[in-house]
Amino acid sequence: MNRRTFLSLVAGAAANSIVSANDLSSRRYLLLVELQGGNDGLNTVVPYTDNVYSELRPSLAIATDQLLKLDEKAALHPAMAPLMSAWKESQIAIVQGLGYDNPNRSHFRSHDIWTSASQSDQLKTTGWLADVLAEESSEVQALVFGARSAVFKGGEINYISMPRTGDFLDAKLPRYQTLSRPNTSVQRHVHAVLRDTINYQERLQREADRLRIKGKDDGGAFGNSLFGKQLKDAASLISLDLAPRVISLSLGGFDTHANQLERQHKKLAHLSQGLAAFREHMIAQGLWKNTLVMTWSEFGRRAVENGSGGTDHGTAAPQFVMGGSVKGGLHGQQPSLTQLQNDDLVHNLDFRQLYSTVLTNWWQAPKSLLSSQSIAPLDILKKV
Image 1 (cartoon, rainbow, N blue to C red):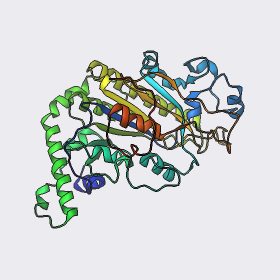
Image 2: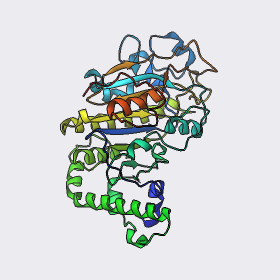
Image 3: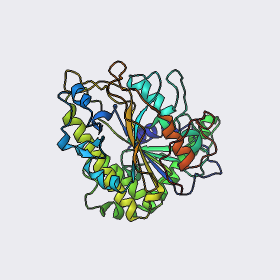
Image 4: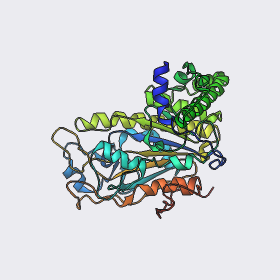
């Protein structure tokens, strides 16, 4: 990673560096997994006993004998078989029908709504995690594997974006002493960001040998995809107590307007293999109860298939929450397939309730973006 690349990655934090006195609940990690492009929820959690499903999707409906049955009504996509052991041990909560009123089908606008936890007619410049992370005392409040994440934008926090841990360890970072005489508030912020980032990099470098050893002992369980390798990095950092409280990852390719059966199968296979390996690693380290995994996507897909072997931008969809402290099972209701709006599923749970669950029940955060909005958390976590 060269100097220019690093500066572009850390630019999201350049005006966002204030370290406060209060930590989040001790060693309670959040792993955010973005399914970029809008994952088709109807072929992910399938209402296989509803005949309307196959009527709406004559070529895309997955055959019943291929599905992974969850109960007498719902089943998982066959590519998600690696997660069935976690399901059977009640460590996955599948939250159905998440969405918001007056849904927007633009990738960019709906992404903004999900990352800021806003209403569809609101424009917010702060990510839903920004204010609560600003209360945490550490050099770096979040790591992002991949592109910068808008869930942290606008807050007074320092987060680092990087493709892989190794790239960050090998980077030649610009020395913060070059800004040793800041004469503006922006320069002072940049000075603080570079100082804290370099301190964190040097801490990882001191532990580089342990990181490399930890990264070799998975036996290939995470797979060869970039997503799997990033998950392996995340698992190593958490298990060596080198991770901040939030790690964000993204898996792209879910914008399946065409050839959906093959494309979604491949992506869900990467997702499931990686998360299953991550779970096993955390269990082995005794940290699974301290870790919460949450997926999100800017929208689901339309209930009716299109003419290109795919589905177009839609609305409501299920999301997954995993962890040793999760109340496993199906939560919420599968949206009706006979009461569509413009060929779209109608949501029955506000997606911000998922965020409120993290902030209120996982971290017991006294102050957050949602604390004043009376957004009720979901009953999907055990009391720990």
